[in-house]
Image (cartoon, rainbow, N blue to C red):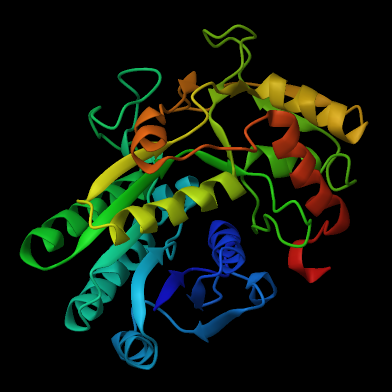
Length: 329
């Protein structure tokens, strides 16, 4: 039986597909390549190009391949874009997932691991954030991801389907080989933006706000190495294969690092001074966003092994230094 990685040519999807191949799983990758890269699909995985809106494509795939479980990464994920173009996010994230579930139910595929987001929580009630905290998203991206979770919940009640939803913040780093990594256009994530400075692609990095109620005045965020994230998705499949009930887990390092700490670590890793420019706060940026992953550690047996910031930025730098233009290089 095979595992289908939807969106497996994207950043987190490709790293998960690679870890599955390394673990000896039979892996099928499907991606429409709208934001993914065929070069990121690991050797040893079978690739299908198609879209989750296309039920005929999914039905054909589920007929040709014996799929045991689905890992679902096929969603748009830019918070800012979701605010200016919400219907794009509702169409892709929600309508596409509805078509996927229609096909899964028809073909009796009963296990799905869903790449969700801590954006489902909105402004946090507690730090670190717990799975039981209220969900009140502050943007359409978080709203559509939460609606996808609800869709899995109600589908699981009506049909023989079990799901795991994984909520996390900032995926970062790259496979230690340096052969695959983060390649977004436009880039919006902090670590790749910082590393554009030593790569000669920008002159400085902007710090948005230096007067937050944090030790150094800059925002604190939870960063998680993409390989650790991939391992969590694989453990979630194992959890479902063992017959366990549907569940939701947070993933994070539980500590969080400030923007200044990330910049300082990048200076250390790259040996570059990385000039910074202080700019005003952005609306809607909470001071701290850190998730508790105690439940994932206890129930899934998840144990992140690449958690240090130096490790994360070191692996990211190996990728970006050798691939300054992503997969175009």
